[in-house]
Amino acid sequence: MSEIRSLESGDIPTIAGMFQRVFRDDRAVPPALVSYMRQLYLDAPGCDPEIRPLVHVNDHGRITGFVGVNALPMTLNGKRLRAAICGSLMVEDREADPLAGARILKAFLAGPQDLSFSETASEVSAQMWSKLRGVVLPQYSLDWVRVIRPATFSLSVAANRIKPARIAAPFARALDSFYRKRMGQGEQRWSALPEAGVAPAGFTAKETDRLGFAAVVPQFTAQFALRPDWSEGQLDHILSDAEQKPDQGELAYALVAARTGAVVGAFAYYAKVGEIGRVLQILALPGQAGPVIDCLVDAASKRGLAGLRGRTQPALMEAMLGRRIAFVHVASTVVHSRDQAVVEACRDGQAFFNGIAGEHWSRLIGGSFD
Image (tube, rainbow, N blue to C red; front, side, top):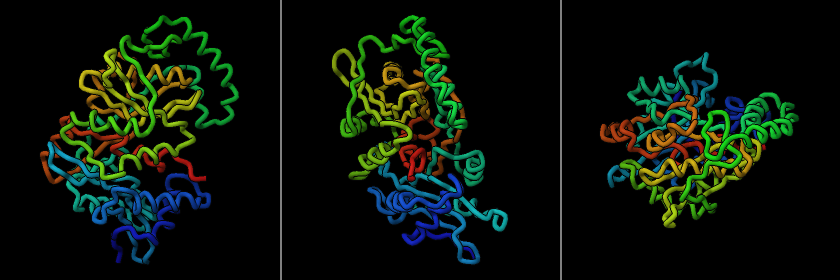
């Protein structure tokens, strides 16, 4: 008879093999992936022995399903909560047991945590969450995109599918330079950013390191009723992990200061010349999101990026309107809780989700293990 149980250390090689086949390719499983999944799910700071990843074992004793889970302490108006982040949900041999995925998700949601959420739910997964009384959060479920260098941006998109397209990079750079130099300083176009940039008067972005960025996180998350309360060493581990994605470029951190010297925001994004930089996190005091976003885009332009892409949060949406930022839906942020107050805080945009309080920091998303 099939069963669902907690992940054990001896399961890791099997789970890594399943992850490789389902989300990557049929090549041999890199030993680094096995080591990473053991560390991520069993040994990382913040791991909770009661909130564990789950495996589905079929009638023949073979593992055919898995849901990755990471624990995250949170607070709601000062009340301590235990949250569980739902990561990779995967099932093999669906023909023999088409309901295995639904059973794993149901078992996960029935766990001891006060709140369950995911920021990478596919259309099928989001439907399963909804059937189990989960809630899709549209205002958290969009990716935003800002084009900086149009020709290089298009080339970067094309090269993800057709590698030889990169031979056209010199031509794309020349075309971008010609086009952007003819734009006025501060001019807003959907197609590009001016060569002169868009840095707002009175605000400056100064690069910092992981510790400098982590030090201001509490200041900028205090405005949210529902927010992370990372355990000791957990946030540093998350940022350290996020830095290990060489294919995406250097993880650059910066603090944004007003003319008075007061720090009003911060951001972290992957910077690789000629590529579309993934924004891990934007932080801003209430009313200061606009200048922080402008400083981020300007910094990315100075580093030679083709564009930027990140995940929305309700606190940033108003500031993004009018800044020639486009929005696309790729995956949904979904939540589940037996406490209606928790659900309402999420629906009202009072929760700090996505980025460092989510899944995109993990090397399983955009990392390399070869």
